[in-house]
Image (cartoon, rainbow, N blue to C red; front, side, top):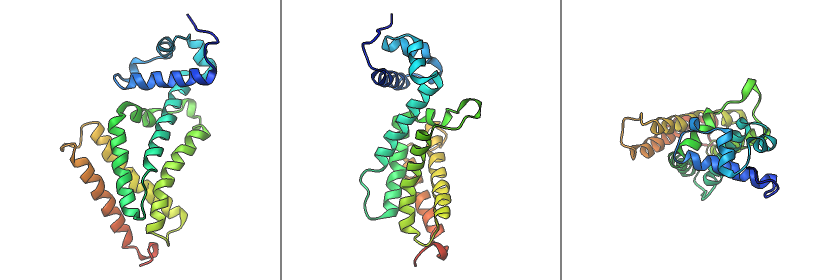
Length: 203
């Protein structure tokens, strides 16, 4: 039975998101449903529909929370060495993914229905994540314009995400500890390669 008026909408929203996260710690998203989430927090499905709009938007809220947590971790402990900062971000990114496997997968597997655009809040989080990388690239390549920096951040991080995803799937065919070495090698090689293009650097 629904526990009407025991919690505010914001509290129920938080409870539902936490219920999904807890479920994903030990089971796949395929075994979850709106009805099950509602049951876990003691409400009826219609209550969650009223708050989120649909089950899809509940999952999107979980995805947004995951992105926000990742952004917080990536923005900590920056120093004045952009190369080391990027290497550290790559390591933190992979560690976060491995520690939050199913929530991390949800971020990239969830698509909008009927080709609807992502909500502005979601897009802003994604932009802020790339912004962290771009802020370091700008320091390393002061002569590169904003479009080039944006492109470089996508290329650089695309490979970092690819290696991380392979590790999640157990398809690196190497010891898990080698992932960090691969990530650092990629960052160093990409930065070194781009540094050869003198129009991007101040050297």
